[in-house]
Amino acid sequence: MAAETPVEYIKHHLQNLTYGKLPAGYERADGTVVEEATWTMARTGQEAMDMGFMAVHVDTMGWSIAMGLLFLGLFRFVAKKATTDTPSGLQNFVEMTIEFIQNVVRDVFHGKNPIIAPLALTMFVWIFLMNSLKLIPVDYIPSIAHAMGLEYFKIVPTTDPNGTFGIALGVFLLILFYSFKVKGPVGFAKELSFTPFNHWSLVPFNLILEILALIIKPISLALRLFGNMYAGEVVFILIALLPLWIQWTLNVPWAIFHILVVTLQAFIFTTLAVVYLSAAHEDH
Amino acid sequence: MNINLTLIGQSIAFAIFVWFCVKYVWPPITEAMAARQKKIADGLSAADRASLDLELAQEKASKELQKAKEESAALIDQANKRAAQIVEASKDDARKEGEKIIEQAKAEIQQERVQAREALRAEVAVIAIAGAEKILESSVDAKAHSEMLDKLAAEL
Figure: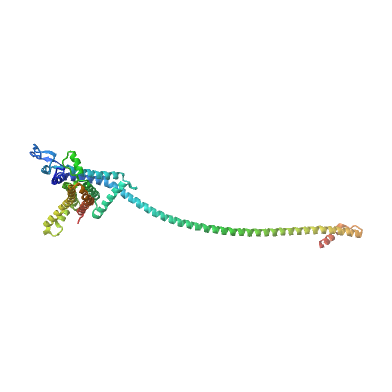
């Protein structure tokens, strides 16, 4: 990729592999014109942008599903062989993770819901694995993909806002579901209308405030994770632009630092999601 | 950086992963953990109980030993006493037996003496009559004088 300018290199690395629908009469990057609306792989960032909402980031989906399957496969493997006698090394590791999540949920979540703990486990391990992909040097996988004929390839799903917003959307739906279920439609509406100021004249103000607070929850979850991961990724790409002999002096400390960031962001996402769900379960 | 269908896809993947985890991953592992916890707790309490049992058993054993010692001492004591009694009793018996034998012997002697005296008496009477015959040179009618002679003999 020596021919590229630094800006192109960075842009290239931050572009997802997009499969989407191009509208009829669209002029592609190489000058050809699409006769009808077609589903195809985007060849440039502009093309990907013009596909609009009807597009899928193949790399994000692929890697996130791969990481999810890795998590479930590993844990299911252990669950099948789970013994009450002295556990093996792998079972020990899995139990340690589960115990950690159990403690977090016990501390933070005050309702009674058997779904919350496994939900937190899924979020934590899945996000952790997706974040961890970023510790793979930035050019390895894209180069392999390039050799296979794929123009763009971004392997860390959490540096794609779709990835983080997708999970946050799931959490948001759960918050709404449990708010309705535990408090009832009337109770939920009451809570939105009469907090924080318990007076009828302030109902509209309360409503705006509370609905905003509700919507902010998933957005803050998603943006925090995305922002941290994206910024880290950009720094990795910038370091990769430096001369080869100096790269390691920055790359190694940054990667070591990211071992912390990767775990911490997964933990923060999980804990905050559980906190929000706990609030949804509180009936006043 | 575009928001697109990936968002929905990611949500669906998330939902499926959570469902799978809730159904197939979480329960078996946590159950195994809880079972092990219970097993360890049971083991510890069993160990506690066992050590308590051991203590009790030791106490009981030492008590039994003490009791056995006391019993055996009592038995020995009793046996000694009984032996002394037997010795005493046999001594007594022996003395009595001896006395009885002596008594018997004395009685026999007495009897023999009486018999001898009777015999002598009879003989003396005969001798006296014979002597008197010799003296009188005539026969004495033994029958006629027997009464007198018997009287004489009885005075002897």
